[in-house]
Structures are given as structure tokens and as C-alpha cells.
Amino acid sequence: MTLPTFEMLVDAYSAELFAYLVRILREAGDAQDCLQEAYLRAYRAYPRLDARANVRAWLYRIATNLAFTQLRRRRREADWQVRADEHQAAADASTAGRAIRRLVLARLAAAVERLPAQQRAALVLRRYQGLSYGEVAAALGGTEAAARANVYQALQKLREEFGDEELDF
Amino acid sequence: MKNSTFEQALDELMAPPSAAVTARAQAALRRRLDAAAPPLWYDRVPDTPVGPLWVAVSERGLAAVHYGADAGAWLAALQRRGFGAPARSAEHTARWRTDVLAYLRGETRRLPAQVDWRGVSVFQREVLEAAHRIPRGRVTTYRQLAEQLGRPKAARAVGQALRRNPVPIVMPCHRVVAADGDLRGYLGKHGVATKAWLLRLEGAGV
Image (cartoon, rainbow over all chains, first blue to last red; front, side, top):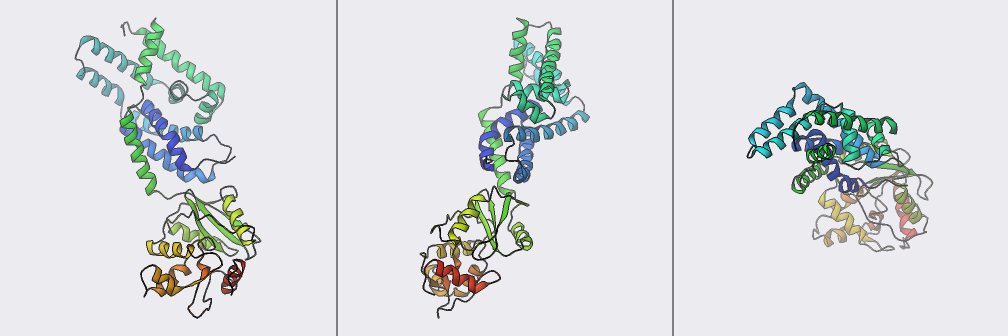
């Protein structure tokens, strides 16, 4: 089996990886920087990649590691996202209904933000990026069972937090 | 009810970026990658009729062919041409190793001309592509080649460009000889002997 050319990897996966990074980082500028850094790393490492490797999971793994680094950096800058979202919620309050909707989303975003990074990534990879549990495990490290548990726990926690909200969406 | 509301909210939170934002990110990515050094794979072609050879390939095609037993200095020069750190790979070089060997054994008369010209000057590339247009079994002179390129006084520069050919055999600089029929020079340890051998292989009367 032969690996595809690197240019094919850009064509095939850059859009979905960008969407993934936007979902994890929740900021398009950061996601764009991360995407470039991920592909540059992949470019340098590609000649040494095992021909039998799952390249898609491999790219997700590189992107995930970079995204986690970015998240840690941000966490040091204290609840960055919560404030940004709530600020936006206030600014967008054109109607009461819309304001509530915004607020609910901001709360949910904050809850996602509080998830352990592994759970958060597992949830996004499985539910929104369409990776199999095997691929999630390959992208995040660890077993398929751990990937399943991470997705389950992430949804569990979010549901709990969401359930506390006495708001109609 | 609550559950589906939750899922709806989560889906909205996880909405993908717009096509325009994605296209912008992809364009920026391509610019960044174009500026980066491309990966390079190389491997040895042992036991050819002209001695051991090395080939190096990139994404775009053949990057270099080298006559000799040792690849160290050659690989360093390739990095100076702007390629990334080379990795030895039988797999990635398989097609070129097979093709070059088949050509040298006389099993095929054609070689693909897909070359990665990164780090090669425009003039040198023109010279080598002109050499590639010389039919198999024929030779031309340095001066004739210079005239073809519209630079009749540049025979010496043409010679220099051929002497530094990064992809010998594939870009057949061996088909260019001196006006008096002297083979003049060639690459590798056995230089002119190799050149004569290649020309005989191709059926040129030398």
C-alpha cells in the first residue's frame, strides 16, 4: 500500500481539520494558525510515516496536540471564552428570545470549555468529525474503550449542566 | 424533549465554519506550505551497468540522480536546493529506481520526464529541457544548443549548466558533445567512459 501524495492530504482533509479546530478552539484565527502548524509538522514528518498508517487519524492527532497546547495557553489567560461569549450574547440581544438563546449557547460553550481536553476532543471527533471509535483512539492515544468512555462522559456532563438550565431553548 | 433540545443546542454550538472562512484558511495554508521545504525520499540503485546510482524524489517528481557509492555530500547539496530533510525510502523511490534501471539495461527506450526543478535556475532548466528534446541516438554540440536557446555566445554557460545537471540520464546531458566530436566531460567517477557507454546504449555512433 502506498501513501497518498502530501498535496492529496491537503485537498482531502484540510477543510474538515479546520472545522475540527474551530470546534475545539472556538475561534477561527487560532484555528487557522493551528491548521498551518499541523500541516507543516505533518509535511516534515510525512517521509517517515508508516505506509500502513491511517493518515486521517494521524493528521487529527497532530492537530489535536497543537490545539491542546493552545487551550492550555489560553487557560492561563483565565476564562477567555466564557467572557467572549457572554459579551457577544449581550451585544446580540436584539430580541429577548434571541438573547436567551445566546445565553444558553454561551453557558453550553462554557460547559464544553470545562470538559477535560480528552473528553472534549473525543466528543467532537466522534460526533461532528465522523471518526470511528478506532480512529478517535488513534487520534487521541489510548484504547477504543477509552475513546467510547470519553465521548459518553462528555455527553453525560454536558447534559447534566444543560439540564440545570431552566430555560426553553 | 429536554434531550433533543440539548442536542440541538450542542449542534448549533458545533456548527461548522462557513465555506468562505474555510476557503480562506485553506488558501493561507497552501501559501504557507508552498514556502516550506518539501519532503524528499532517496534510495540507492545498486548494480546498474554504469555503477551504483542514487535517486531522490519529491512529491512533484524526480529531484536528483547521483553517480557514486556515497550519498552524503549529494544529500547536503539537495537541502541547499531547498528540499527538506531527506529520508531513505525504497517505497517512495521504487518507480524511478525501476525506470532508470530498465533504461540502463536497454529494457525500455523511454524515461518519464517528471522532474522537480526546485532550486534549479531558469537558464539551467531551459538548457536541460533543450537537451531532453535531442532525440535518442543523436547528439548535438554545446554551441548548437546555445543557438537553439537564442544565445549563440553562451556555449560555455550551456556547458556549465549541463555539467551541473541534477538529473543526469533522465535529462540527457550526455547527448551534448564538443564541436570536434570530443565527448568532453561527464559526471561520476568514470566520467567520459559513462557518457560513451550511454550514447552507445542509445545507438549514437560514437
